[in-house]
Length: 141
Image (cartoon, rainbow, N blue to C red):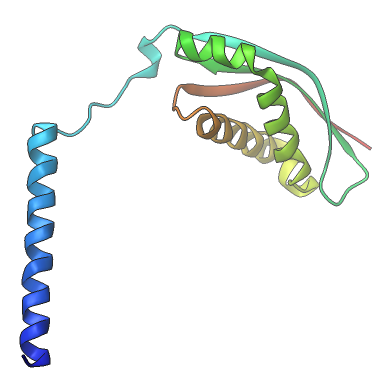
């Protein structure tokens, strides 16, 4: 069999596999896109992280954090409460891998809020950590 015929057969087989896959997804999901969740309508639960001190990357300065984690799932809120050490460790890792420039000012606060939220959602395999509020975010020298 020539290379040209072999390439045509492989291309047809690949197209067939893709068509079957797309059809399976449409059938299994009913052809509907997943509904967007409006987190504003869900009950909120809060977990406080107090007096967390961490070194800043390549700096002699220290960051002090007191924060509140907003969660829109009661089961996750309980899990987070029981595993606060995971949250504290994650925040420490974020700060220790961040430079002063990344943490300073309003942009620094937003950066840290986003990083904490993304990391916690990843660690707990969810999207139910919806916000991080700082009571204190101090960089001491």
